[in-house]
Every structure is written in structure tokens, then in C-alpha cells.
Image (cartoon, rainbow, N blue to C red; front, top):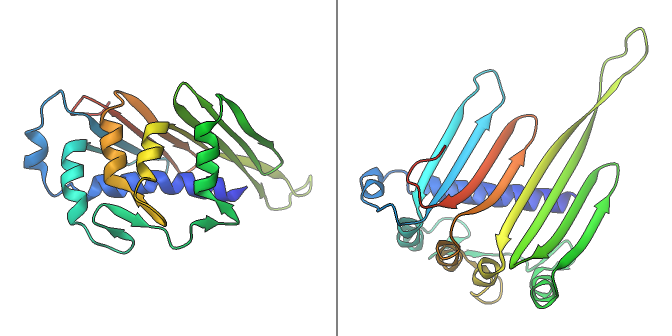
Length: 211
């Protein structure tokens, strides 16, 4: 089930990249009012340096800047998907099925490698993924020992944002439309990623600073 883990860690990375894209414009950021919604990204490294990166970006500013960025698959505020069927999964058909279904827990997978839970409740799509990593240590007096590590990804996405993201048409994701939908949802936790190297927290609220 590594596709789930890669996909949602990738979502964290995408939001972080979008935030960094507007960092060269701090003067504009300072002019936003408190009523504006802001995207906050906090990345904490667990290495010896203990570095923490905080990025705070007004959604309104991101909406204006994204359309002028043309790099790789990101063009005019839309991300082109090279293959709409990923690992034999039709994402559009899957999301249409989830959108039209009643609230509930749709997928629960428990294995020695991954735990995955996908559910929908009160207009939100929830994805919780735990990836288990087993490490084998050098052989000692008691023989080889093994320890386990976990990477956890928790995603909470308003269904309206999912709809907006897939509103561009075939093989494209409309990131600008998704940001507009996000700005109308109010304060929302989006992504939490925890592993042995870093923790990533992405959320939106009306504050122009992060905790």
C-alpha cells in the first residue's frame, strides 16, 4: 500500500513548494488583513541540527502568483497528471464514488507493512496511513535484533476542495480552484506527517503567524 503513503507525503511536499514559491514577496504578505485565510506549513527536523522551518502564506496571494508560475507539470495554476490511472486506480472514478456515497469508513487495511483507513464524515475526506519500517541491527551476543519505526500521515480534506481540484478536466488538477475552495472552509487542519526524520504540519486559519 505504499502508493497511499507516497501520494499523501507528496501532497505535503506540494503545499510546501507552493508556499515557498511566494516567499520572495514578504512585503506583499505583510499587507494582508487578519480576515484573510493563510496557509501555514511547519517542518521540524529531528536530526542533530533540530531545524524548524515555518512558512505562512496568504491564500489570496498564492491564488494570484500561482498562475504565473510555469515549471514542469505546473502551468497556469494547474498541475498536469501524466497518467490519470495510477497503479491501475482511476482516481476520478474513485473520488466520484466517494463523493456520492454516504458518510462512513470505506477502506481499512491492516498488515505488517501498512495500516490504511479512508473515511468520509460531515463533508470531509479523511486518510490515515501508517507505514511500518523494520530495521535489522548488527548481530550481537543474543544474535541479530530487529526494531520497527513508523511513519504516520494524516490528511483531512474538505470534499469541496477535492471537487475544485478535479474541476479542471481530464488529466489536470486545478490548484488555484482548490485554494479558493480552501479559503471558504474556515480554520482547517490539512496534513500531519510524523516519522523518525521530520514532522510536517499543514493547516489554514486567519492568523498571519504560526505557532
